[in-house]
Image 1 (cartoon, rainbow, N blue to C red):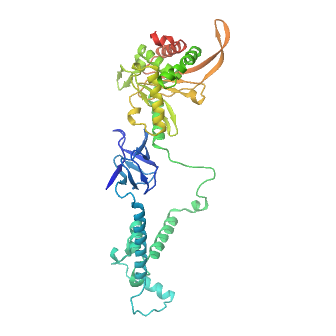
Image 2 (image 1 turned 135 degrees about the vertical axis):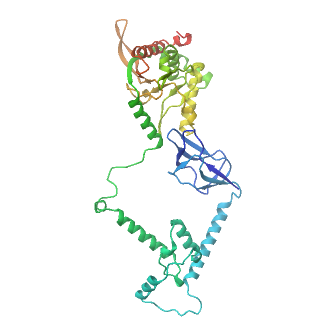
Image 3 (image 1 turned 90 degrees about the vertical axis):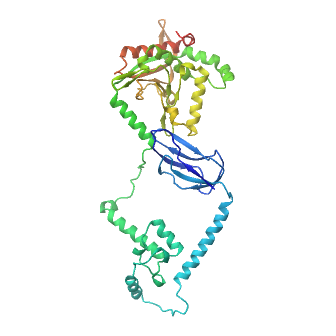
Length: 429
C-alpha cells in the first residue's frame, strides 16, 4: 500500500509552488511527522512532513514548479525491507536484459558467419527498411531507452541482426541529435565565447523575492508616501527592563524585549489616531476596530511579516511569546499563509542589524509603518545640561492620502512619550 504525498494548500490565492528541496533520498526510510521536503510560494516557505512510516518514492524532483494538490511522491507503508528485494529484482532484470540483448544480436543457429566489408555493412544499413518496426521488436533495455527519451524507433537506423535496434544504435542516434541541435542553435559568435563569464553567476528570483519586489514597487507607485522622524530617550525603558528582566523570565519563561514596549505604545496611539489604523478601499476609508500588528522579520528567504492579532488584549508576556513562536516557525519553515494576513499596522526593527536611521516602505493596504533603529549613546540637552543618553531614532512612513502630516507627527510623538515614560502604558495615559 502506498500513501500519496501531495502539495498542501496554503491559501486560496496560491495556486502553485516550487519544490525547493527534498530532505530524504528516493528509497529512504521515513518516519511519521518527519520533514520530507520544502515548498516555496510567492508568500511563504513551508515544510511538508510524512503522514506515515514507510519507504519514500520521489516522483517530482527539486526545483520543479508544481500545482497545489499535485502528487510529488509516495510512501510505501508495507514491506519496509523492499529496497533490498528491489535491488535483487533490478539485478535479475538487468541480467535478463543482457541475456536477451546477446541472444538478439547473435545469429540463428546454423547461420554461416561471414565478415562484411564496412561498405557492405553501411549499404545494408542504409537499405534496411525502418518502417514497420514496433516496440515488440525491441529488447527491454532498448525499449527503456526509447521510452525515456521519447524516440520513434522507425527513425533509428539499426545494425543488429535481422534489422533489430541495439543500444549502440540508440546512443548513436541521440548523439547525432544532440550535435545537430547544437549546430542549429549556436551562432558563430556564441561558439567563440565561453559559456559563462568569469566572476558572474545568474540565478532566477525566488517566488518570495519576486513577491517582495512587486509589493515594494507597488507601494512606491500607488501611495503618497511620506516619512516623519523623531528620537527617543531609551533610559527609562532600559532601566525598567533591566529591573524586571530576571523576574519576568522566571515567571513567564520568555525574555522581555523592547519590541513589546513599542507594540503596546503603538496600540495606545492607534486608538487616538484611527486614521492610521485604516485602509483606503476605492473611494472608501475602512476603519478597523481591532489591532493586528505585523512584525517584520528578516530571514534567509527574504522579509516576512507575521501578524500578532488583537494586541490590545495581550500582555507583555503574551506579545513576547508570540514573537518567539513566530521566529521558531520561520526558522523551521512552518510559517502558514494565515500567519501573514490581516495586519492593520506594521513595525520593523532595523536596529537589530545595526541601522541608525532609515525610511521604511509601506506595506499596502496599510496606511503606516513604524521603523525602530539601533540604540546609540549620544549627547543630548536635558534641563539645559549636556548629558549622555541612550537614544533611538524612530521613523513613521505613512500614506498622505489618508493621514495628515499633523496626525502623523503627533502619533509618533505619543509613542515617544510612552516609551520614554513606560509607566504611562500601564495606566494608559
